[in-house]
Length: 287
Image 1 (cartoon, rainbow, N blue to C red):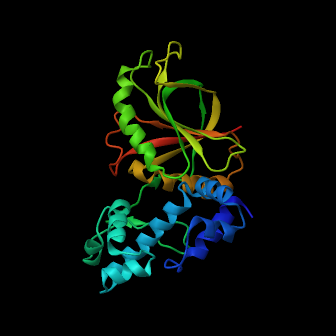
Image 2: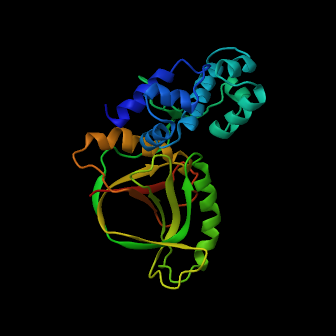
Image 3: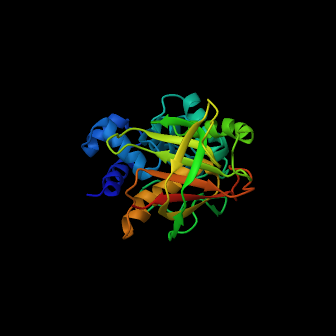
């Protein structure tokens, strides 16, 4: 079985079991992998850690039940694996941007289908949820470039990347030897023999990496041919795009990625990264 098929099989097994123990060790045992290997495999295919995936699916199904019939919010919380109403409400607000009571009154909330079999396309207030704008990527040569910025290692919570960007954007205009106008990029790198982490670098393109300020990391990204995908919508949902790329689109293509990195680039004056009309490009290098 391919990586995508293994992950999909586990995801389909979860459906209808939302009140049961769906901890990462339980899911890893179901897949027949070690905890670290399964977490790395799942995140690589889906674009988010398994714990976050389970939470989003649980809350989406809970929201659908709340909007579909008259029921007590407390009962729904217990039915979907939450031990108390406060935890359920807090998670509902963070992930879906609404409240259980609002969903019960018929308010629109974003629905996350994940890999559920036969699920309808996710819709929010009549509009497609964020994701890849086209299943057919552009094949494009990417010239070598120099990048300076900040780096962190991500193994569980991808939301730390957004917080890193929020800080780095204020730092970028003061970096010496930067290219003008400022060109923001995000670089993700990983080791072939490591299963549970990825290094994320938020940076700007540079003229040179000589005399780099002490708080910055420098990277030289080699020239390569890339499959280029466009993400549409809020950057908070970029995991949806990565899931589509690595689980669905790339396995169906003749040319496969075989380099241990990818990167994102952002359009000039792209605007609010959490707006519904936001766009940026994802580059998947080929050997």
